[in-house]
Image (cartoon, rainbow, N blue to C red):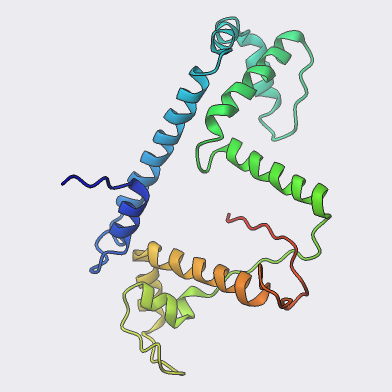
Length: 217
């Protein structure tokens, strides 16, 4: 009997494998992430070609003024916002909206970050400006839970567990970024559920939480 195995739970199962062989492999996370980006890009491209105006998009690509495009690139090299000044440059900007349709499906892309900014703006319009801006960076190499995730033999039931020396702790985290990521994810979950108490009847530490938005650098 054939069983369909979806990619996300398959990768998660590999990363949580008992001997941590996939967690400590230097290439596995990069390969999986690159495959995911390629797959998302292909999906976005397929959705673009399936649109009724794809022939119109193809004509715009063929008629693109390379001089105008290079001018936009040169003016935006210092990071400033560029406004189109000529009809040819406006055509380049219009074409970028179609490119965003593909890149928006790719995790970590510039368009994905732009969509996140749009989501934040929508929250501000709907609810209001944020009351608190919280930034936290857990000291992972000092935390017993993180070291346990990274494969260190730590007694988590003890109030004062014995920890390896500093170099050994740093080495354990450096060789197992998946364990460190699991620890950070756990901290974020605890912050939203115990400190903010999102979706609960009782108010959180800062009062009732109507909405929150979190990003990772």
